[in-house]
Length: 608
Image (cartoon, rainbow, N blue to C red; front, side):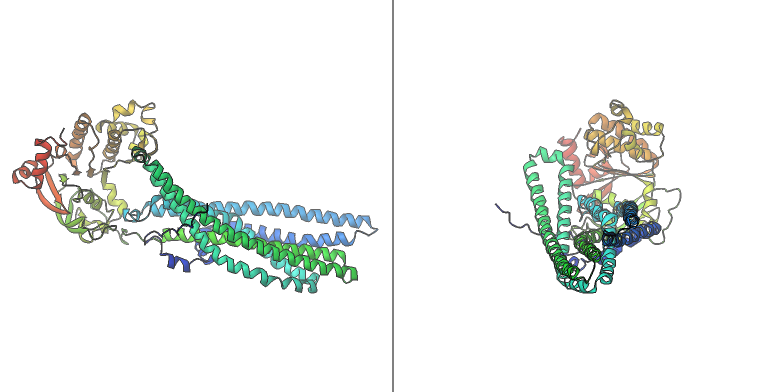
């Protein structure tokens, strides 16, 4: 049973990808000009490849001349002369082989080098984008751009472009030599050209649309698979495998249907072009054969003309196929350029201001208002005024969605306030390069990230130049040393993708060790002990207490037992500061904190 045509994939929201109507207007080969900045550094390699290309084209065009001499001298009595013509033809063939191999090596090297640079440029761009970017674009789709789209470009630069240029030279050179060989037969051949060009231009436009649609579906497929595989345990726990398979299957089939439509158009175009081209050659050959019988031209001249005609026809056929590849590469280039040119919502200042040294950790929120880009109507922070003194330990508590984690993200300048400002040691964070002030901050996130590396490498992520002794000391302080040494290879044990070998509590202790090793003047703990058992939490809490003694520490926690010793507790509710004080002061005042404390300590909910 035939499937109904799949709906076209919806474009991702701005600013990364334009609306379909806007993208439609930009689908042309001019998009390939965006590759120029990546190719110009290798100008010498391009020139060498171009010379090899011209050499092979010239040798190819010279080969029919040698063949004509051989054919016209079949009946000669001078055997030595005939041998010379054969040797000349053999020499030309050898030169063609060497030149073709050289062209292939140079062009392929150029393609690999340029694509490697493009991949690095795109990754360099997206790895520095703020979280607002990833609210609108799936990471799987970005990965598809870096892999699938760059593979298309590599194919074009490393193969298609050189083949296209070579065939253009063969077409033009062959056409000129055809005219010199026989103006009459050449005139007949030129009558075929409009019939060949028209379907190339007409069907080529449709090819562009279908090529872009295919690539969009491939990106959607990659994004869907990435999301499901990264959450594979949740998918399996909720027996969602069948629904995930069906969703991926639908996207994959839609991609297949789009590819089939593109293949049919390309096959139709190839069929029309090749049939018209070679039909014309047969007709011209018939006329030429009659001229040979009439003595108006030699057999060698006819063979020479036929070879040139085949070259020209072959060049036209090759160009018709390469046209489709160039269209696909143009679409791929467009998408990569969109990523490279996407403006981040968080930018470093043109003239960065240096933080006072050493960094003391004095943090101030001055009437800060902020809403997440994906939900602009909801205020995540609504007029927050807060001053945190150097060396102070401040805890943030409140119900889910109150703005606790948002406070942490704003201090790291993952987002900028809609109004107000945030300062570190009196300097507005927007006036400082992000790479500078973030070195003064250590983070333990709510969802600890473990890289596919060893335990030591994961901890050393906080300080790449740390010694083994420093790594071990940080692990001990985070109560991680014991379970790490129990792993098969100790600190050299591979932890698997996303730390699949570790429990939730072990992941958090690795993340805490990473922050301890960083030894920054500002420490951010976002639910840092939420996955720890009572014994590990006490050990880590003791380490945190020692660690926070000489630095500014911000703690986000739902379990109030972890924040009782904080210098101050800030109670957040609906993005506003509802109350500030010590544990005892807030309990005595009543209100939200007192209610939370009563639930946790009196009723035993979430208490240890």
